[in-house]
Image (cartoon, rainbow, N blue to C red; front, side):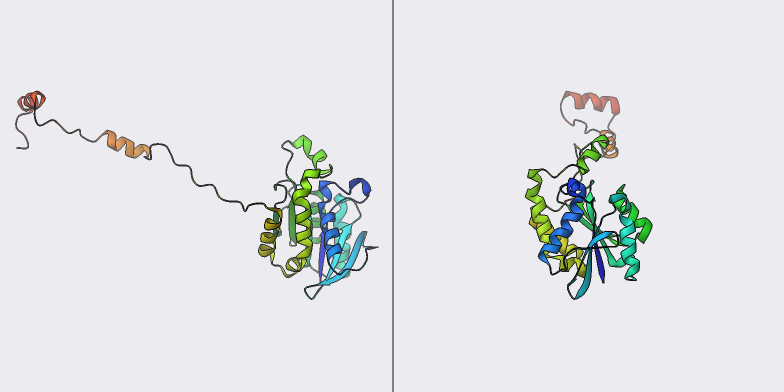
Length: 238
């Protein structure tokens, strides 16, 4: 059995917030897959279903973000599961809007919902981070995450959530790379590329330039200058 947790804050006031993208993801998964109606248990809204031949429990903690771990820990212990059986879906400031990363373990990155799950469940669970972008200054972060998605955001947000919901079986089977590729195609974003190393002007190192500077110059062999040098230096080398 797996638990898929979406993080957010309960209530209509927060429904459209960037911080609630985890709730939005679970609502999309619930709509497009065979799950029971939402019910209340473990201080959460839950729904049960089966995907890819495995039982799956959707969990939307109703404790408010900072206490999310209470709900997830209670469900994990009730079903006698381990952290490896949990997938947490949540917003990530340090990813560009529409970017997705999935990995096991790691730090909480200042996310209070993840900090709470770490405390109640341990750290070795899968984390699906959905990028919401950074506002650019620390003092703007609270208003950014607790602000609603703009209309323009739905160009990438709606295809992202739909594609995730349609391919939840890949998430359950642990086909993370394949799933991320599908989400990239759905949102029209490009895979990140490493920048080519910058070439230094001139194409020569300082050492080589020094060596070239110290090379002996070719002396003239004909003309008045050559005759004068022969008188000064004699006929060495002949």
